[in-house]
Length: 458
Image (tube, rainbow, N blue to C red; front, side, top):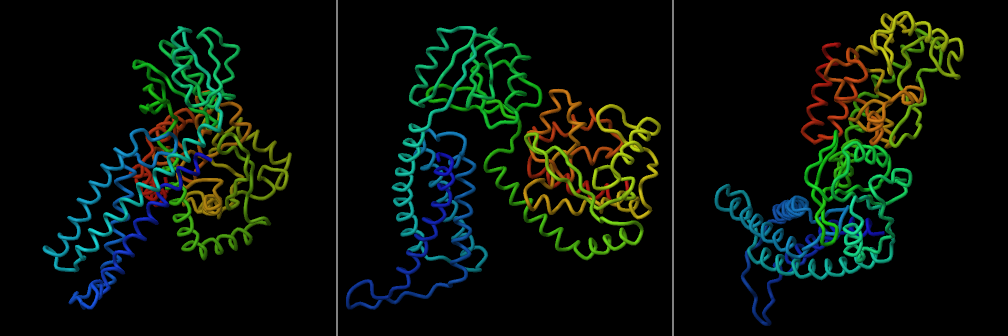
């Protein structure tokens, strides 16, 4: 419930700003505000006023997000101080925009009356709403109990921490660093390490809770783990480092999901004629079915149905609905004779199972187009590490399981650094780097470079 309360904050802010702006606009249109006096108020352009309102709403969201006013994973301390800063920056910005357009570009102008009335009314309404919303969030936090595990080599210090965290209504267990058997980390909502803890122990905890929604904090300043993001967080009066797997959390995930939907729809619409043509060519050169389906491992280790255009002869494609045991035996023989990539993920050189049209589909990656339907559905994402088979995942080292902490993708970071030429360990390192350093700029770079790789046929 607390999460939903936090999600409503930007939505209500948008509604309040828009409603206040519209109310100020209607008041501005009135010419008889003073009884028996008709005011000679010049008209204002409606379309330009709407554009200005949209700019103002968007800029407020940007300022608020930058200042972490809309944090979803934590209670925002000093909320109204941050809110006041955001409002100040916002007022300065929208005033600058109004006068810049009017005096320098001579395109349109906005009423100063609207800016003043709008700013005052929206400010007071937002303050009242946020006060009520913060009360509701505090009430929700008080009602819900979370299990907290504290790991420390100093039990007295750990008990002091517990005393300070009582306001958060947590069920707490304290264990020593050497008490390894009782640390079932995935059963706790939060794990808090205090003071000196072996880096290997910290890494083990991260790998244990990686596929869950649990949080991990460390009150220390001198430990750094592999493939981990560090952010400073407050636990009541305590400042701690929170260890995370990726920068892609909460709002970032929402924006990435929006991107996946829009981009997938765009690709599906423009490539539908091509996909129909490919389906016809596959049928003309081999038997049914046109699509190849396979069970792969997705986010948090969940099994999902992976689809692509079939590029192999039907009777040689692995899977019970295709070639069955006979195809599996052929595949195992090819791995022994022609495998060019050892260990987890095999790669068959000059694979005789591929049809003539299948070779072209693989070189151009057209066989991957049906996966955009999975990205639209939400099973996959446009950009993330590629999904692997269950028997391949069983061979993962524990650090490779970090690849399962997010959705599988259609294209991926390792794709642009050699595609099939990399061994699995090299590919995993690149994908783990992406998980840790993911950004909008990096996503755009991967999309552009993927297109380059496809056109070059590498």
